[in-house]
Amino acid sequence: MIDPYRVLDVDPAATDDAIRAAYLAAIRASPPERDRERFEQVRSAYEAIADSRRRVAHHLFDVSPATIDDLVRAVSADFAPSAPGERNLLRVLGAK
Image 1 (cartoon, helix red, strand yellow):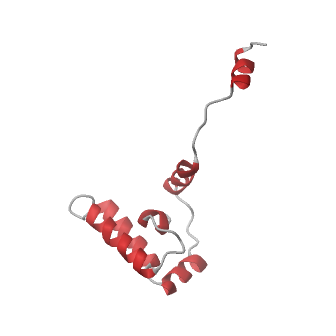
Image 2 (cartoon, rainbow, N blue to C red):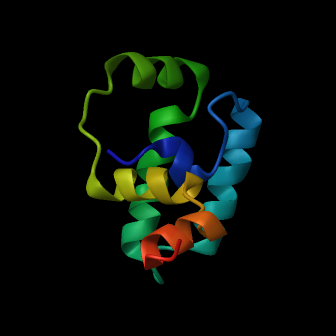
Image 3 (cartoon, one colour):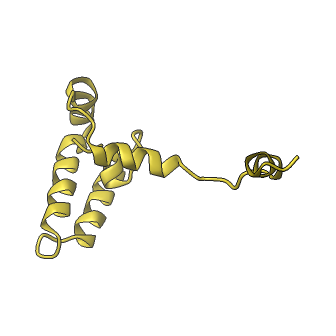
């Protein structure tokens, strides 16, 4: 299952009201008539973490493996490539 916190773009420590607001915003942004797959993702994510009881159950019992999309999102969110330094460029190019 795709991480419901990423789908709704909320912090894991978010309140019920914040999660509900994020859910409603996501539903408005992708109604079922326009993007059925995204709508279903948002709906299932909200159902998984809608209230504190469901969040605890999700954290304790969700053992579904990460999907490729989960891994790509996790890496791409934190990955910021930087330009190599002058010293490394010179070493790679064979200059002394």
